[in-house]
Image (cartoon, rainbow over all chains, first blue to last red; front, side, top):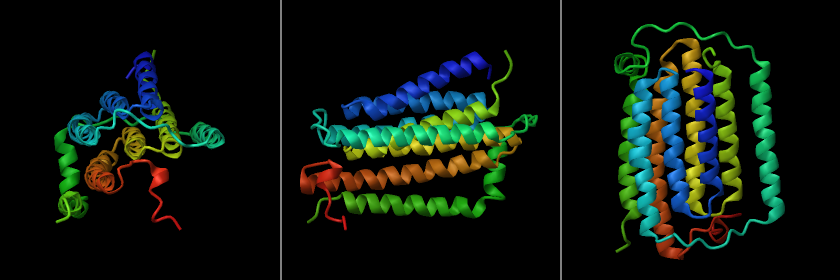
Length: 163
Length: 102
């Protein structure tokens, strides 16, 4: 991905992430989440992770955010009560966030990183991903299916009305 | 203009992680806290994909696949808990739900 396109995407991503964190109305936060996830899928395409980008849009932007919006609308939350966090606490959190960001940037700046290796044809497609998934990562893959089953049962049991 | 260096992607990932952390610390609405956690997971995903590209290996992308699955499970169970909490307490403010606080 060329530098100007990356910078444009990066600025837009950071802006929509800020919308999630700052906006008072949770519906706007959810829409900021959708746009952040879409922009990140574009960044994934720039990193030649095509399959992951498609999965990101289908699972995250398609399924998870819809779940969020369902809950927000079900609970009728569009009028948000005032946030009760005190001002010094917000200042401390923002200072901590800035310190964290600077620390990460410092670490990245100090770490020499080899230029990206040339990739084989088909890198990031369905086939190489599936090959890794069903050979080296077979056990975690099966455990993931178990995790999802437990999550489904748990969500139903927790979510149903007590008799 | 050449290709964007991998470290820029890592820097963007770090900035997004910091924004998500500030969100978790400052917001009191539990749904928004949840969204900030999703943002944290995604920032880490970006790191994984960028480093996978840097090493020319697919393993990082496979990990992202697992992170997606875990995030889906977490969202399903977490939102069910939030629904039940709202039924019981009529609030989603993290400061008013302190029964488990020591």
